[in-house]
Amino acid sequence: MSVVLPIQGFMPLSLSNRRTYGDLSLRHPAVHFPSFAFMKNLIVLQFLALLWVAPLRAALISHEGFSGYPANATVNNRNGGTGWQSAWNGAGMVVSPGRAFPGLVASGNALRTTGGTLASIRPFTTLGFETLRTSSRRFGLDGTELWLSFLARRDTNFTTADYAGLSLLDGGQKLFVGCTSGGSHWSLQLFDLGTVPSSITLPTATPIVTGETALLVLRLQFGVNGTQDRVELFVNPPPGVTPTTPDASHTGADFRFNQVRVQTGTGAAAAMSFDEIRLGEGFGDVVP
Image 1 (cartoon, rainbow, N blue to C red):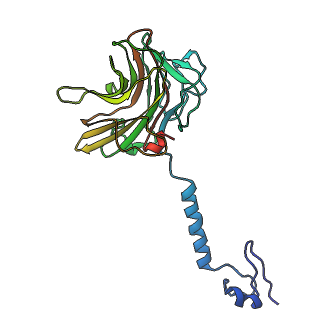
Image 2: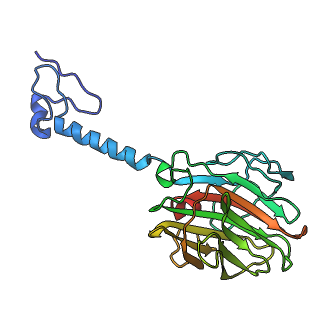
Image 3: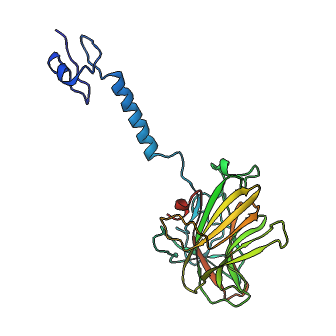
């Protein structure tokens, strides 16, 4: 007499039920196994499930929400957030609560800079993102695209000499987003264009309102026309929908960057706060 050993998840197949379920076993006098075709399909389904729930890596490169930093203390030497090469260097003050924008994931505190303090600077990491960086470990490799976002709020009224904003650096300043000297609207500035004039200022139609937080988003496309790069600025785009019409844009710059700087100048009473700085490969990564 033969013995049928059950396998978890499968009904033992006797001569009587083999006609009902079909022959899913190898014809062995003692043990019945699921068919090769059945097991192959099961393995394929399990592999596809792994791909669905576990992408190879996240597309968010860097994020700073100033969470966990003590309020009313300088940001100097603070090393929180993710995706940074080293700690902050500068005298900006951590303030609480953080800034918010409808629909945007935000937490923690914010960073305030004033005209009487030096800039606060921090280098991005490129580790793990070799396909996006140049041989000198700068972001800006031709054929790649990056997005950057941050929250900004002018905390005091400015004089015509005051300015404040976020800059991308590679030694010198390559790009600036914020309030330009004497400006009344959110603006984009580009430097070292290699042409005359060597810099350009592009104001948007969105006015800067003291005490009102703005979401500023950059799309950086490198090498769209030979070595020329394209920069697009979007002001207050709604989260969840990738914007297509920029509020300001320019094609012609050719730049690389590896650091971010936030700064306010020149009057000591001038102040702007920054929060939720994100660098990533797509809009959804920097505006979650």
